[in-house]
Image (cartoon, rainbow, N blue to C red):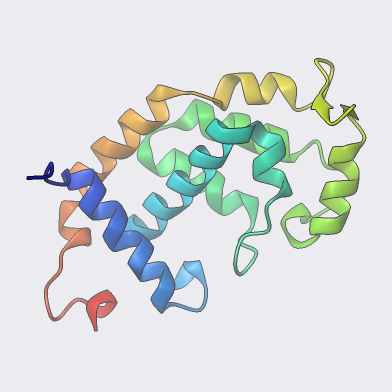
Length: 159
């Protein structure tokens, strides 16, 4: 018999199912949106650093400020500030809207398809990648907002 999913796993499953049912992520209830954004961002950063996160073009192109707000909502204020500071490195406004321009800018600090240690994003990546505090705070956030991840028939995400 398999291991029963944790509250966090069930909340994440619920939140990701909600994404499938809306046109834009801002249509999700705030706690659900927060979990989706932090999970997506931190998962990508843990797997490939900020380079990987910024190379991605998220559905609906949510502004990076929405990700920053999600980090802050779970209590990861320092980590949210790190992300906000990294976004400021782009030499153009609204980088979330321009994947090709982001990629062009991100290619500049690359050498032989690998991150250079002098990449302007490296210091920010070092502070976010593998940051267990984010996952701990996200799990605590889910616990505090457990009622937002219910499965009742009156829940708009289950209809």
